[in-house]
Length: 324
Image (tube, rainbow, N blue to C red; front, side, top):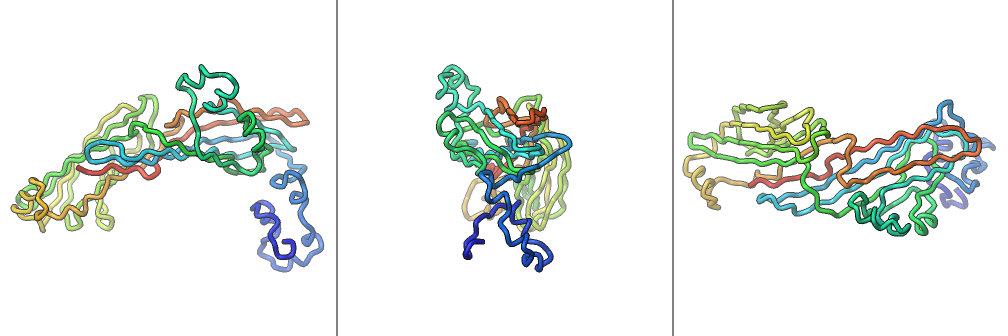
């Protein structure tokens, strides 16, 4: 603080001052500003040493998707983040290269920009360590990283992509107080990729009872507190299709209501429970946008060799498919 004004909000620096022992602030050593705050590189202290120099880079993308009941994609958006975990000694300089379309065009590589292997990133936000002037000049991402975990950059893409996991639901109310579901799901990504921990949440009327399920794969659970059925598939390989059937008792439905619902009449069964189907998933080693890390260079005065590790993950964001 300087005359009541905060000089730094960096969590690494604040941890040195916000402790469990309130009397520590009275020490002379604590009343002086930290060295990192007066440095040109305030986010990284000097003299950091690690036995093993490594840096981990995760490209994480979340897909927001809304599909209409007729199969039309109403909204599609990719929110991405490049997350890093740095264990590097000294004061290293890093340069990160992506298959950025604007960078290819700026450097005269128009063929690569048009070749389909580049992406046009929007709404890019960088960590304070990135040299923005350098990026604006030649699209080079150059930076001295903080020690530990941080988000290097976030980005967004408004683009139309095929739904990675497609779900169709056929709902049939029957006379005799029954309702039947037939759910078909299909993975629409390459067969070498695998979606892990897939959860498909299908809404059901609030007064159903006596559930019974039959599925070609995975487990099905009825959650009465959430008025939905959750179909869990631990591993969903690309290019596969699976079926699930569910039967419920429905005391409130009569034959006339079922007939009205089948005809689409407004005076029949209340359809307000027909919320969109929600899907959760995570696909490792895959990015829906096609973004790639072309290189990660590490330069440090002492000349040590560091190991960079890169991982790609695509997961669901707000992923919904409306029921017919």
